[in-house]
Length: 34
Image (cartoon, rainbow, N blue to C red; front, side, top):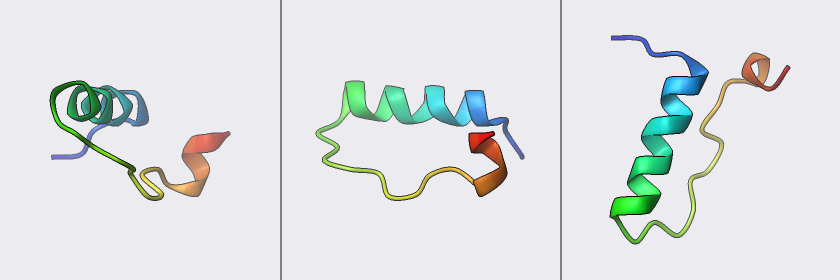
């Protein structure tokens, strides 16, 4: 299943909220920054 950049951001935010995440390296494709 593909998810949008916004959905991916929400997913990563939930990881950071729920788990002791230190960093997430390069989570988005280059075109998602535009």
